[in-house]
Image 1 (cartoon, rainbow, N blue to C red):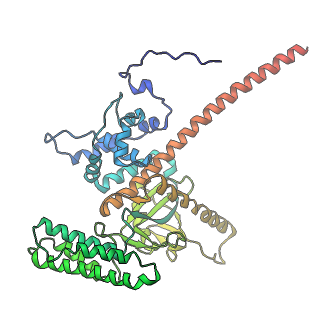
Image 2: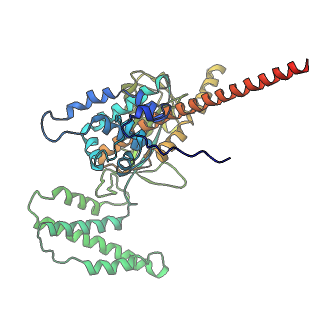
Image 3: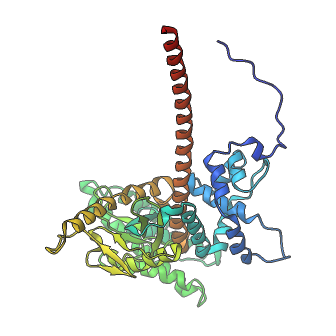
Length: 445
C-alpha cells in the first residue's frame, strides 16, 4: 500500500513550542522540573544595573552549560546546535523558534567566570533536588579518580623547547636583541634526538638533550639580565624551576601553562601515570545519585580526602550520611563528620551474621560507583578537562556530576513513557483477544 500524500500546507513558525513540541520529551519535562528562579535570584548580583550592554538572560546561559555537559559538546557546538534544536530553545526559556545563535561561544567562558565555583555548585545542588528521594538516602559510596588536564604528555625536552620559544617571544615583544636565537642549532639537535631508539644514536641523542637544556638556561639568564626588574619575574622563576628540577623531586612542573598539574598513579595497567587532578565522587548506595563531586588540587592519600568530600555532601544535601562504603585506598579511616566509614577488611569475631550480611551487601554495592565514574568520563566531559586553571578543575567536575544527575532523570522519564505505551498497547490487544474469544464462545452454542 502506498503512503498517502503529505499535506503541503506550511505550519507557521509563530506557533509556540507548547503547541508544537512533544510534552513527554525528556528535555521538555526537565525544563518544567528545574527551578530556574533559584538561578535568577543567585546570579543577579553579579550584574551591574543600568550600566553597559544588556546581558543575556541568566536562564539561557545556565541552560547552555547544562546542555553542554549533558550532550558532551564543546562551547562552539552547543551554541551552533541551539539554533537548530527546538527542544534546546524551549529548555532555555524561549516560547517560539529563533533562527539565530543565542550568543557567542566565548560568552560561556565569561559566564563561568562570573558565577564562579559557588554558582556551579548551585547547579549541582539543583540537580540533586530534581532527583527527589533518590538523593536523600542515608548510605553513600565514595571513590576517587583522576580528571586529566588538556596538556601534552610531559617530557623534559618538550618543556625545554617551550621555554626557548617563550624566551624568544618575550625578547621580540620587548625589542631585546639576543646574542643568538639558536634556530639552526635546534634544527640539527632535533635530528639527533629522533635517533634515540637506534643503537648508534642513543649517545648522540642524550648529548643533544643536554645541549637543548643548556640553550634554554642561557636564554633565561640573558633575559633576566636585560629585562627591567619586576617584569616577567614570575615567568622567569617558573622557567628556572623547570630547568633545575630533578627526576626524584616533589612538586615538579609538568606544564608551563598549567603549572598546578599533578602526576597521579592509580595503578592502572594501561595507563601508569595520569596528569591532572584527583577528584572525589560520592553517590547514594541504591539510586546512584551523585551527591558530592569535589576536585582535590593535591595528590593526597584517599583517606585524607574524606573530610572535604563529606563536608561538601552535607552542604549540598543538608543531611549527614549514616554510613559510607569505600575501597581499600581509604584504609585506616573509621569515622568522618558523624559518618561511619566502611572499608573491606577481615570481620572481627564479635560481628554477627546479620551485620556481616549487611556489610557484604554494602561492599558489593560499592562497585556500582566504578561504571558511574566511567560514564562521567566518556559521556559528560570528565575524561579530559579543557577549562583553565584550578578553578576550571573545580567547575568541570561539578558540571559533569550535575549533567549526569539530570541525565538520570531524563532516562527515567523516557522509560516511563515507553512502559506506559507498552502497557496501553498490551491492554488493547488483550481486550480484542478476549472479545474474539467471547464471540467464538457464543457461536459454539
